[in-house]
Amino acid sequence: MSFLTSVRVIVKEGQVSKYVDAVVGWKAPEDMNGYLAQTGERSFCFTGIFKDEESLVQARPSMIAHLNTVRDLLEEISADLGVTDPVSGPVVVEKLNWCV
Image (tube, rainbow, N blue to C red):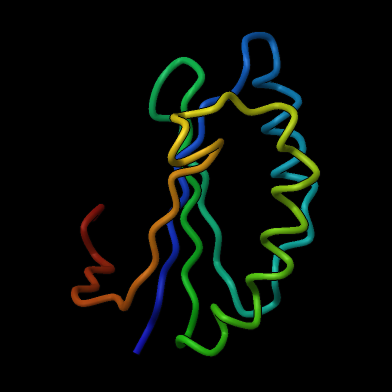
């Protein structure tokens, strides 16, 4: 069963290009397909899709290490969340032909 993780962030004013460049330049985990969506002027959502839960677990250190390289580019979302709003779980519906 596929697993995914999605992380919402808000980029500091004037840092959007630097953040996007850092995501483009990141060597993502081998078992992950990653997507970055710009959801607002400075807000983004990164989604990583993995073949199974174990692949996601194995990729977490790499994802955290990458976050640590861009953390200073991000605004705090809230005191409870910090600079990210992450969620993960199993894929329950997969539609590959939505954009025909």
